[in-house]
Image (cartoon, rainbow, N blue to C red):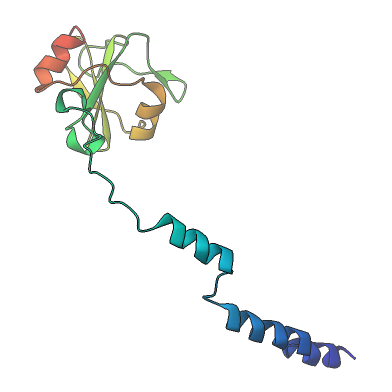
Length: 147
């Protein structure tokens, strides 16, 4: 019994065959009303080319055009239940968090830097706001953030 159902389903029915034949004949044809509307509209006019981008002084560099990003982090940084401290001076607050080349670096107020492997760029993006400025040099960025 099941073999007969499967055999019938494998071959298209007569109604399906007629439908496919008719739809094949209608492919590429349009109703007369559509042809009249196309003739009334006429050829399309060329669209003028307009520079709709922001002026260069208002454009923001994309992430791939920057060497890195930085933000200040005043409170203690807690990772995996422990407070992160500077390996050299022991400072545990008032960090600069640097994101560069898919790595996160922490810089204490004394200028010591350490790579933080427990953080990644996704964490940086989640925990920082939009950039308020871009700087030509690393030192300019440090001055901007008060370090």
